[in-house]
Length: 156
Image 1 (cartoon, one colour):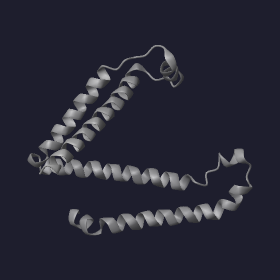
Image 2 (cartoon, rainbow, N blue to C red):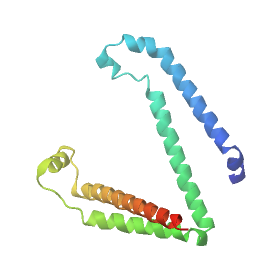
Image 3 (cartoon, rainbow, N blue to C red):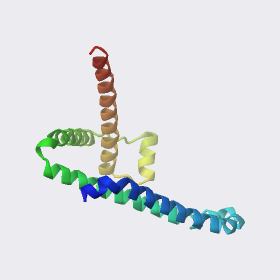
Image 4 (cartoon, rainbow, N blue to C red):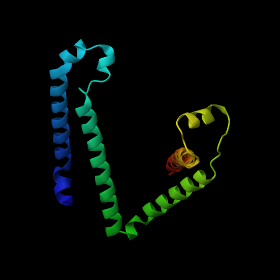
């Protein structure tokens, strides 16, 4: 399977994407006249573009499942070679859960109003805050390592 995908994977993915795009354009251009004749309020309820949206979501799900499956397969078959990956995932998990546990539950202000408006529980708020802080910390770390490594490469 790996050799087949290495040889033909890009071609297959391009052809599938092209076929979906052509089908979507045929559907849209075939129904555009009727769509334009509808009232604006009824246009918002139209399902003319549903195929494109559903196809995009399906492709994203298929790609995510494939990516996760190949990562797990790679880790299982080469555990020693992927120790850095596992350590990195462990560090990210520790940062995420530390930030989630230390989340501040605001009881006043516009954020609190938004939390009440969308019925966000304290647990969900902790995951949101943890995810945001994890992204910020990892972004700052990536930027700092980029700067440090570029300076080191400059002096080599």
